[in-house]
Length: 101
Image 1 (cartoon, rainbow, N blue to C red):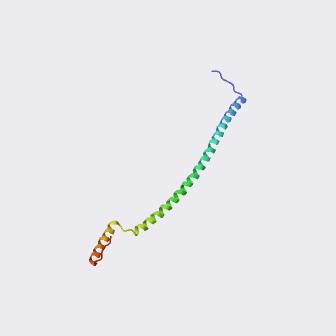
Image 2 (tube, one colour):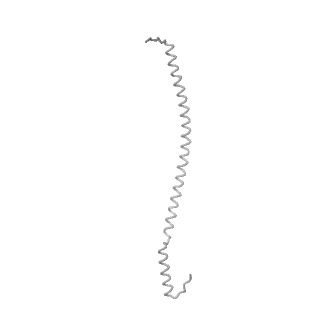
Image 3 (cartoon, rainbow, N blue to C red):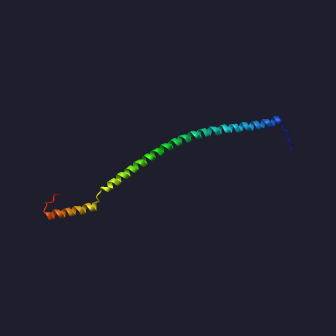
C-alpha cells in the first residue's frame, strides 16, 4: 500500500467539508423542529379546546343527574299507581260513588 502524504491544507479542506455537510444537516433538522413546534402548538390548542368541551359536558351531565334525581323523588311507579287505583275503586264502591271512566 502506498502511503499518501496529506498536507494541512488538504486536511483542513476535508474537515471544512465535513462541518459544512453537518451544518446543512443541522439546518434541515432545525427546519424540521420548527415545523414540529408549530404542529405541537396547534395540537396543544386543540387539546385545550377539547378539555374545555369535556368540562362543559361534565357540568351538563352533573346538572342532568341532579334533575333526574329530583324527578325520581316525585315519581310513582306503575305497580304502585295500579294498586292505588284499585284501592280507590274499592273505596268508591263502598261509598256508593259512581265510577267515571
